[in-house]
Length: 240
Image (cartoon, rainbow, N blue to C red; front, side, top):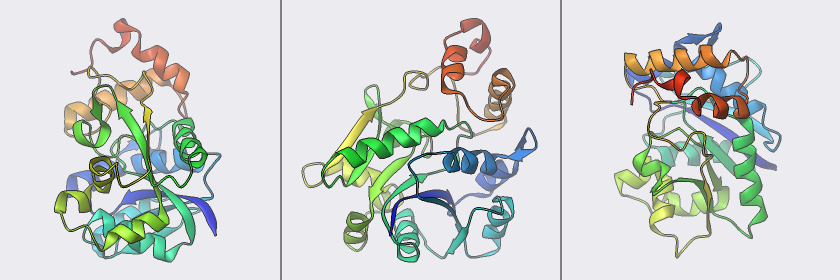
């Protein structure tokens, strides 16, 4: 059995989201940037990209690096997607991430896995932003979520609310008395409202290109991004 499986969500996407994943930075697709940050983690036993079973999923499959497996699913919501993936792969826990933001620091993944592993029978772990939880006030996919596989299997058949089925992390946050939930403070460098890291329109994409060019890195250096965001002269042109 694997200890912790990294799961990249490439299924249940809109056409705009799939188009975003195929855009390129330094010759690599956005999806490859996300996947490579996850494969660079020290505490993951493996990584898999989940794509749709239909024609839409072929785009994601073609963008996935050849050394990373792709699991095709017919799931209609996130809970079913995770359940299908966990049935295919035997793993104690999983680290789940969307693809909205291409600049993911691998140490952030490892930090979350380590925090969950230090807790007895942790069911769910995530980062918490100042005065808000990421899945409520931030674009979904910005930061990873850690789930214990056994707990996910138990709740899969009992959750019927569409919000919970598509954002299962909110179910744990709303029912913390019943589950062992571990919340970590978000890194200060990204816990801010004056920079848009995720893609929603063309202006956001321009911001991502500016940030990428300013970093000038093949992989992300968390200290460099922190220094960059603290420099007002560099980031003053970004859209609030």
